[in-house]
Image 1 (tube, rainbow, N blue to C red):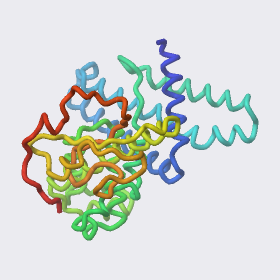
Image 2 (image 1 turned 60 degrees about the vertical axis):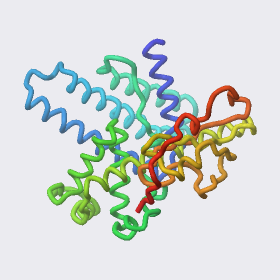
Image 3 (image 1 turned 30 degrees about the vertical axis):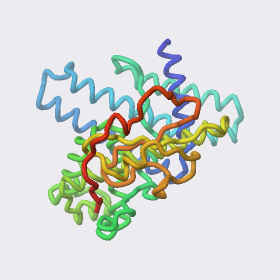
Image 4 (image 1 turned 90 degrees about the vertical axis):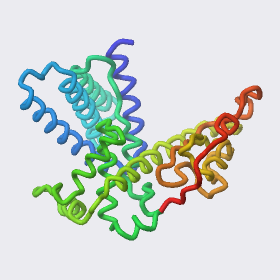
Length: 313
């Protein structure tokens, strides 16, 4: 596949994902993109300052690649979110095609620093994470009573930034611990950010729980919505709960393993998709009756030993 063809395919997908975001989600993702870009630019500058000969090393290439992804996405985001729709209404098809071509050229320009394939940022996942309404923070009484809505908005924004930057769970946890602690205040930050960072006292274990649970929730919500889309064309498509059945699993998730429901129905525990509890590692997948293989053992038969039930706080 040529680079132009690959760029066009990604651009089409980006357009589709941006169009699928609500106005509030779009604004929050754009804020997360800007923060991620600023943090990566600072990290690259600091790396080059410490390593004068480091421009050609893997770390510098990684930062530049991540910045190219974000800048390309922002160019599409800004233009698709405003100009493209306005142009379509104002000047018709010819002007729209010109705007679309301009976006493609911007994206291809930003991808020049890539050594390999052009990649796409998880825009839809970032949108889910950045939206407080999609968060699970309100479900857990200790967290809900401790954090204000402004605090939860700050947390969800930082989760979106982490996904955009491609951080691992551990990297995301470390960044939130650093930002949320007393020494993490930034003097020129907006007031809500200052308030959030000033009042939060995050033990690392709590941050890790929030990061893992919220990100898994966002991805599973996406899985469920994908199953629902498939079911529009094939009403035999259902969703199935798949548990991670090892010694770290719990009895509740073990019992849920293999449950099958219609795409938007709740499971037996009254949730539509994992996570069932903090640190849950379950997932929801598409399922059809004719996909089952009768000769294969079930996951429960393969993993008969689990740990005792632990009731989350």
